[in-house]
Amino acid sequence: MSENLRSLPPFNRISDDVLRIITPLVGEEHFKAEGVIFEEGSSGDSFYIIKSGEVEIRKMIDRKEGRHKLIAVLDRGDFFGEMAVFLGQSRSAEAVAKTDVTLITVSKKDFSALFSKSPDAAFKVMEFFTAVLMDRLRSTTDELVTVYETGRLAAAARSLPELSGCVMEKVFNVIKPEAGLFVVWNNFNREFEVCGQRGFNIPAGESMPEDDALILWLITKREPFLSFDLKNEGRILVSPDSIYNGCSMAASPFLSRERLSGFILLLDRTKPNAFSYQHMILLSAISGYVSVALENLQYMQEAVDRTRLSQAKATIPM
Image 1 (cartoon, rainbow, N blue to C red):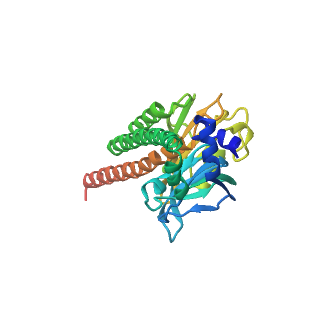
Image 2 (image 1 turned 180 degrees about the horizontal axis):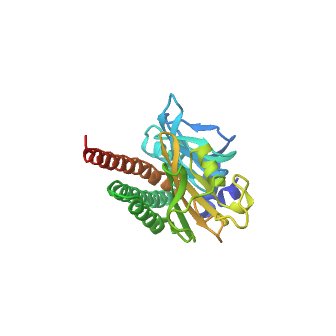
Image 3 (image 1 turned 135 degrees about the horizontal axis):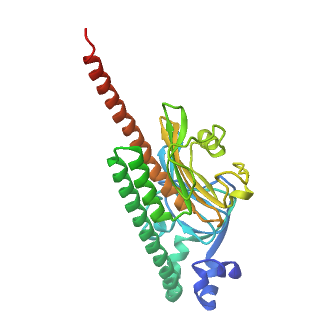
């Protein structure tokens, strides 16, 4: 167990003698994919460090319908559930195994006893947790500012070019992809059209193919798409001459009344793992604001059309 701990934060920064004190205090648990590790609102008597696999942290939106908001996806070396243990609060979100996972567990009782048995070891572990929590806070603050600013600009946009331009600029400044597309459904032509792009040789107004693999996937799933290795996975087929030919992709749908009204796509043609789950979650939050902005633009256009129609009728002799 000592060697397993040594390979994981927060234990890879402490001395061998401290590690020997900690090792008897930790346990190990296994969960199958989709297994609930703890529920939102439950009491917290342990925190967890991921030894292998991935874990989703989710906030319940509608328990009756089973709808939730994805907060984070954690993998090897990440820890979670610590706030309930340190502060004695109930769990603020639920944790669910995204894949089969193995977790290192530390109980509240044993961690408290560590302060009495070896204060030096306890403080070293706490020092690591504090540093990681501060990094998380800074990252969360930056993401909240980005979402807020993008939402504000999207709400103020008075045209599709203005909307796509401000959203693409914000996304590229934060995530820094190699290329990106902003695609919207055209009700008049009954097809998806490119409204904005960076890094693609596609003019604004260009129609997307009806059998576009990503569009078909988004219509069916109505959820973000993330690929760390696009060439070697089979969710969407990418031919060598496809506009999506690359290594990494992140895409998030715009939804109107549960129907696909467009999407934003980010692509890196050379680097696998260019985008993270946090990028996907950020992109999804921004897409929510864009979806509302698109509906507002449609209502504004309909109001203009009605006014023009009324004015045209008024000029017709009775």
